[in-house]
Length: 436
Picture 1 (cartoon, rainbow, N blue to C red):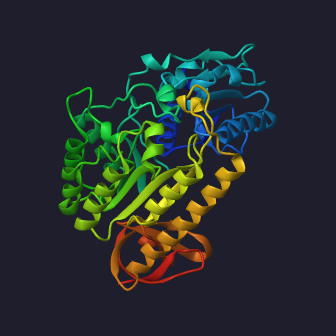
Picture 2: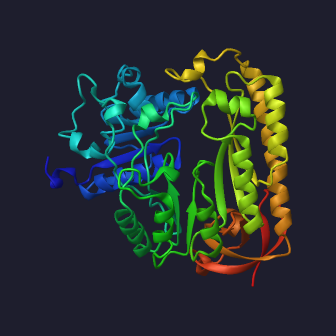
Picture 3: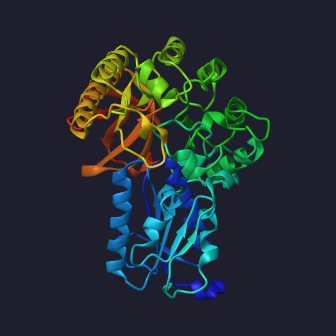
């Protein structure tokens, strides 16, 4: 089809899962728009629907299936394209759903527009999924839904094969672009007026393997990109967060004091069952290093509750360890059985109701820690990047160390940094105050 034949056609995206998926959906959407498509909301009627799926949990799989069926009811004649991790791992399951025209795996997703030859429904679902061992090409991507912040993809894939995780099978080998090309992408974002980028990937600390470069080199190069106010480092494995990276953040121009460490368990026995590449003592050393140099730094932590092999004693050991860490917030996930993972062979299965109980205990711990982190900063002045109008004529923004603030809306505040006095915490858990 010619570009003219795409004019007036509408495409709708629905993205599930991680920030990396959101960056890639934005990149795919730009490919459609370059052909003349108009992007509309997924709830609207479209000529093409794209689901960028996730398969971290069984609930993610279920949501993808429901989204397919809902879109097909809205417009039975639309082309339905499913990509992402669920498509990579369970293409046969998706292809058996009525209305699905294309199932594109992780190695094919960024060529998505090349599969549209016409707008006729396929008699049989076209499945294009490569073996994960052959997925080694890196596609750059960044999200672009507003001017304030963007998720910049700097790495993809994983070589770790933790026992509970399907991501290496869903996304392939660990890979990334060169520092030079990644910095060029960051400059594009800055030139578009974006003030903050969040570095994202599957295992970003593993950046540079193919090109004899490393993540520290990338961080130093990105710190020099003019036009950006802030750069946030997303999840980095504790064993890959080096002293030199932490020390560089202290005096950097743009890298903010915000860290995210995927602990997963505070029990060394469980970490060993998970085949994680560090002990809890390594995790503690990273937290202590950060806090010794930047007492105000935000540290977010991922934790999985109820994984196979986690006894009640293991959980209590993990809980007490996490309780005693100087961290700011937990992202808590219940363990979900994933087909093809080694964790299924581990004896002692935690009942689902007990997993939920453990999750709730960790969430309550997180809420206390998060509140305490906010309270420690009341009475201080912080630089806030304001984003957009929020509820009830309010505008919200974030400090560099990830405290959400709110004040009276003024359009002149949007996408700008102001000194802000942190005074109170409202009922929604947002800090209120005033611009200085």
